[in-house]
Amino acid sequence: MPDRPDIPLNALRTFEVAARQGSFTRAAIELRVTQAAVSHQIARLEDVLRVTLFHRTPAGLVMTDAGQALFPVMERGLDDIARVLDRVAGGPPTEILNIGAVTTFAVGWLIPRLQAFDRAHPGITLRLSTHNNRVEIAREGLDAAIRFGDGQWPGVEAYHIMDAPMTPLCSPNLDIQTPADMRKHTLLRSYRADEWSAWFAQAGEACPSLTGPVLDSSLGLADVAAEGFGIALLPVSMFQHHLFSGRLVRPFATTVTLGSYWLTVPKDRRITSAAKMLLDWMQNEAGDRQSSE
Image (cartoon, rainbow, N blue to C red; front, side):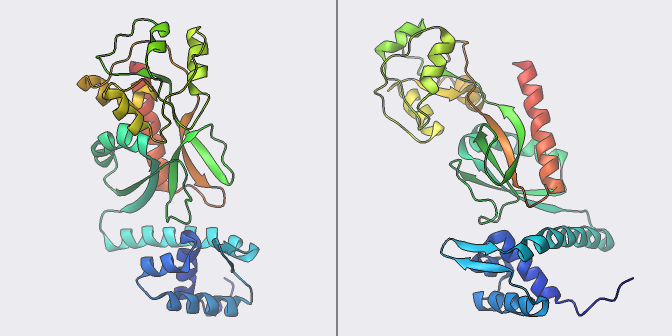
């Protein structure tokens, strides 16, 4: 066994939190110490190792090559220590999972199923936050983030959860029998400009001129459509509760798939065991649902 120098455990723990949070301020909040204390521990560690671990930039902390080499080792090591301590203490193993999810997916699909996830995985405490598809995993103290798109984001590994076929949804008070009938109504738009043209092409119709309002939230589009102010093109699986309640109706079976939901993890981290269990559970739930639709 190699000789071990004096290991600055507090400084190493502080480094792991600061690297994960991307900020001395947020690291101080998590560790319940002052920002000066965090800065002191990092300076001590850099002095012991004789390397620079962070560059301070206007955008926040950026790890040096030395920091990037040390961080995954510390993250794995602290996770392993926590699991062993749980076993030694004799209590049930628990793992906290911090997940950010795009709001449409969180509200329309995940939250209604959280009790089922808790029953399946009682050893995981899930902490859920929402975002608008723009998220910085490390800076926000997350283990992973659920996003909508094509699975191609820089710096992250993306794991497919489910496709998100889109179709027009509207108030039951609108008289719509054919795609051509939609020309008489306002077509509500999202920030993705190609959605309606793609759906009309799938339906075999020319896309009308689009002049409706643009909203940056699918939930907002659904609410406006439910009030009868227009027709929204939405991922139907996220709005089943609107259809069951009768707030919205689905005039056509035609769908178009322009993106999917993905669990994303920074490439410089491994996916945690809890995040992998959540991913497997979501994929199973999505597969069961899609096979029954």
